[in-house]
Image 1 (cartoon, rainbow, N blue to C red):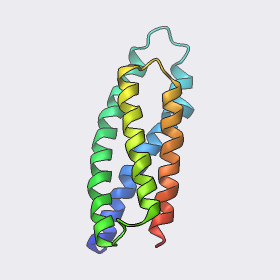
Image 2: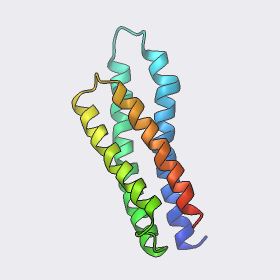
Image 3: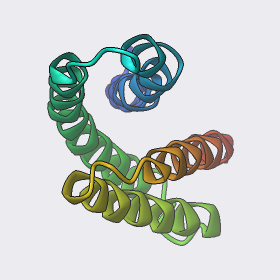
Amino acid sequence: MSTWEFIRYLHLVAMAFFVGGQLVLVAAVVPATRSLPDKTTIRAIARRFGVGSLVAVVVLIVTGSLMAEHYSLWGSSDLQIKLGLVVLTALLIVWHMRKPTLHAIEGVVFILSLAIVWLGVAISHY
């Protein structure tokens, strides 16, 4: 495995954690815990996922920047759109952290995350 394959691997694992974690939360955790009167469990899961997501985002930024430089992608319009969506997603996550009862933000973050993955796949074929 080359260095660049390993960097791409790290990028994909971090993306899988971030987006896959959202899928698990949306499809399994929230529906299973919604009817529980005590919200302690869901809050603990969300906090743990938040910490893991922070690590994943740092890995995504570092590995993505390295690959963009190595593959001369900074001028790519797909990359520019992807980065814009990443910034928008980050802002929405911060907003959601401050207003956790605004559940619509979660859905928008999830949809934006899927769009970011789509653009990442497009970019990987350059």
